[in-house]
Amino acid sequence: MAFVNKLAIIAGGLALLYAPFEASRVSSVIKQTYTDFDNDDDSIKTYACDITQPESVKEAFGKIGEDRVAVPNMLINSAGYVNLMPMSTLTPEDSLLHYQINVHGPLLCAQAFHALYLEHRTLMQSAISSGQLPSSTKISGARIVNIASQAGHVALKDHGAYCASKAALLALTRQMASEWGAEGVVANSVSPGPVWTELGKKAWADAKAREEYQAAVPTGNFAEPEEVAEIVAFLCKESSKNINGADVRLDGGYTVR
Ligand SMILES: NC(=O)c1ccc[n+]([C@@H]2O[C@H](COP(=O)([O-])OP(=O)(O)OC[C@H]3O[C@@H](n4cnc5c(N)ncnc54)[C@H](OP(=O)(O)O)[C@@H]3O)[C@@H](O)[C@H]2O)c1
Image (cartoon, rainbow, N blue to C red; front, side, top):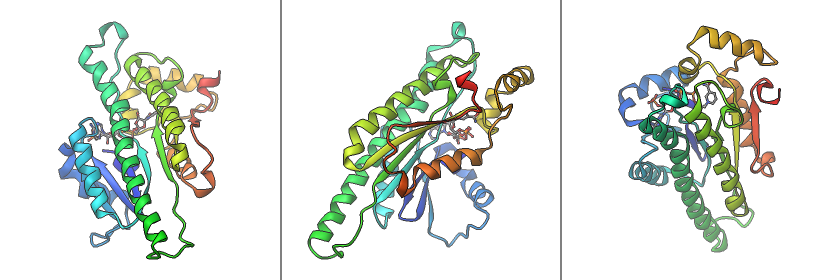
């Protein structure tokens, strides 16, 4: 479970979505990940959510809306799925699963987040107009960061369905940026090369493939999860508000060769 990245930030708090069947591991993973987290601390809230199911997404974001103390303004779509196989043996079910988790899920979450953001921005604007909030109150714009992949840019051995789904996520990010930018919601993506997480270990389990890849990438490295997090944090800064529809490649230069 790597749900550290799957977050929506609510007014300085963190809403983490986890796949429902992982419920029993949530508390231990949070303690392990956020070492200074105290159970009485209300700043991290968790929500069961199967991102491929519209009802589950609706329920989770409904609860996030109820728990919120101010405008929710950042969504990081990080859930992902990969299963390697040659295109000739890819099953229809597995092909669809890549699409459901890597494209449809981020779309459902982004729609729910966008609606929630607009709803609460309107409430704040009314409160400012009616004098309930000072006229100097500043309403922050919203950020969506989708975790795509270098696989969205180039073909990779046995990554057919994954490559196609990540390319679709890049297209979806551009569309979000184009449609929602004027409403104060900017959208960008990060395209990492291999990162040594559970998913990375699955995709690069074959030592020979790993060595060949590392010999081919200009920097010769896999990235650390923290490097992805730093880019996400940068894209979420107030000073990044005019970066919209961009994709940041963290691939050691692999895709520019
Ligand atoms: N690691 C890499 O080399 C690499 C490279 C490029 C891009 N990426 C992308 O980076 C993102 C994060 O991946 P990671 O490496 O941190 O992988 P990870 O450790 O496997 O995390 C992916 C997470 O997605 C969750 N997930 C899968 N299906 C879900 C669903 N239907 N509903 C809710 N959650 C679901 C998984 O939950 P469970 O644990 O419960 O299954 C898992 O926690 C992914 O989008 C991945 O494609 C990774």
